[in-house]
Length: 289
Image (cartoon, rainbow, N blue to C red):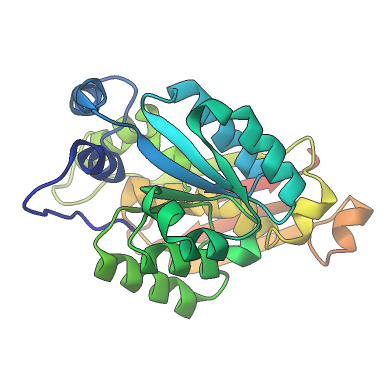
């Protein structure tokens, strides 16, 4: 979902964002060299606004601490729980971090918005679409947790907006960034599994995913359900590895947890997918197993 941009000139900071958005960010291997060089030459950190300080936001906070302020400077945190945002901003006082209740407030403050290079959207699922539009309309490099939206027309709208804005735009399917999955995809693309030119040679893929211990109910209420929240990672990875989209999908599910059943969702699912090449895939996923 990120279109490669080739502007005539990029600052160090913009160049780093561009290289990362292009997928060249393995932790090792040949492609890591370019990003490592970019990090070494970075004359100023990428200045980040983090939106959402819940479950996903906490993971991003860990990542920001890991890479350090020389690479990524947290200049603003946004959460509807303003007291939480203020406490979090205080933890990053050395980087002059401020707290706001909404991203609209950040963008309305010209001075503050000017300090932001990139926006991480880690808020509840139902807010992603509007926040993506707001961030991209302001021409900010944007990372959003998935999904962009539960509605295909809104997803298309955001993708078109990202292309028009000509800024890096990434969706949080993090397995695409794992060097092992990327190496496997390269092997498949090179025909290592195929005896027929032009065919990937993959016959069967089996995916297994678990989300145990179960996420908090407040997260589950806005997660979009097990298919949007969990299985979309597996569906995306099958597409990432093979480039194929299924022709047929069959699924069965059951709910063991009464709290999840009360949300009109299931907690255990098995899905079978059939593809035009003959590839068959299965995905089994559970929040309780």
